[in-house]
Image 1 (cartoon, rainbow, N blue to C red):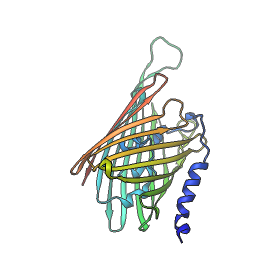
Image 2: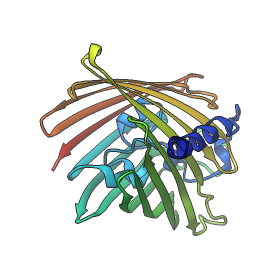
Image 3: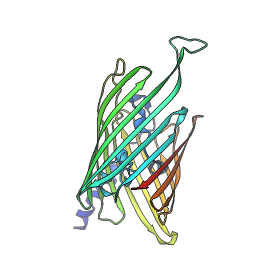
Image 4: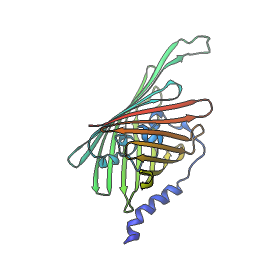
Length: 305
């Protein structure tokens, strides 16, 4: 009986260890790159190891099954100062109706001041912008106390100069609380859908598979708790990445976070912190990039409704 209870855990760990992790990134393999930028500051500070945790409104992005385990309703807003003056925003809310859990998420990305040219010239003909939008509606439910499932339906829109494209996509997820205290597992499929043509060709969605585990350890000597997490992320027609993360939580008042991602040419280390007071939370994540690209800063504000 003990071995039967541990079987799901063993399967998740074996999958996590056997998925090949590529050392070469191919960002040009797919379009709508803003869908790969992540959501929330806590998850990013932990190296984007949130598939098995997914316990705040950003579950709309990471794993919709996590919405079923969140107690009460919450609102989360994240602002991300990305590279090359790209502004990336995320707003999400979760709530319950009976035994059913719901989430709504809005993600936008925009950049302006792109020089317009049709031939090599000293001065550009003008400037234009690019805009991306994702609106997601999620549903989740507990099938039993230890297992929850969820789905997110997405509407997508992209505009570059005067060219436009729209589409729909679906995410599916599950989250499992194992029989070993403090050990969780999760899996998600993301961005499976269709987009219309952007001028002559339809952007290819960054279809992604995620699988992860997380272990929470009560650390009485440290007056808090420790969380260790790992995700394998496979971007179809591109690369696979192993993400590692950790969080120290001091009595739900202050958190320190650290993460690392493999398989990227220009980034690896992630870091962040969080503070909480009554119904409010403030989280920050920092991701440095090499090759002179600069650093990114992400700040999130959450409130329990």
